[in-house]
Length: 151
Image 1 (cartoon, helix red, strand yellow):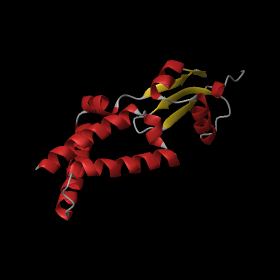
Image 2 (cartoon, helix red, strand yellow; image 1 turned 60 degrees about the vertical axis):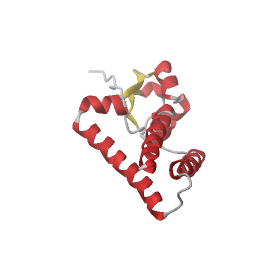
Image 3 (cartoon, helix red, strand yellow; image 1 turned 90 degrees about the horizontal axis):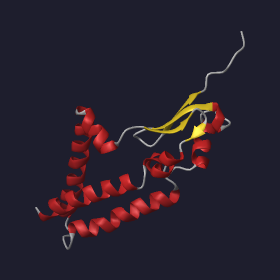
Image 4 (cartoon, rainbow, N blue to C red; image 1 turned 30 degrees about the vertical axis):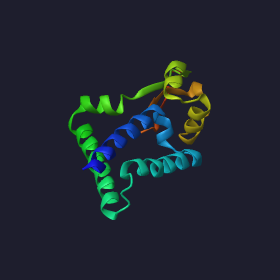
């Protein structure tokens, strides 16, 4: 039972840590980020299982993580208010062609990252974007400005 409690605590701490790193880093992990997360998983495993190196101990830890992940997913899909509390609301990063630097700084997203994602969505310049929204899953959605056509 000790492994289950330690796995639960580790799950919560790792979840908080991933939230603290910002959503954009979870949307597309760099090689370095992936290496850090994999290494972190290995390091935390030692703290969860302690001296227990049995297959049962490892499976209990993995099962605890899986159950908590399913529980979080159930809560998020069942109750919209819980979803906002757990995942946070979508964040507007660009409005009417202008970067919202406070929101970008808070989410640890640079203009370079926004422009890179914008180019992949067919936008050449920040000014072409009516709205850029950092979604709950870490991806950025783009909406084009209305083209001003003369009559």
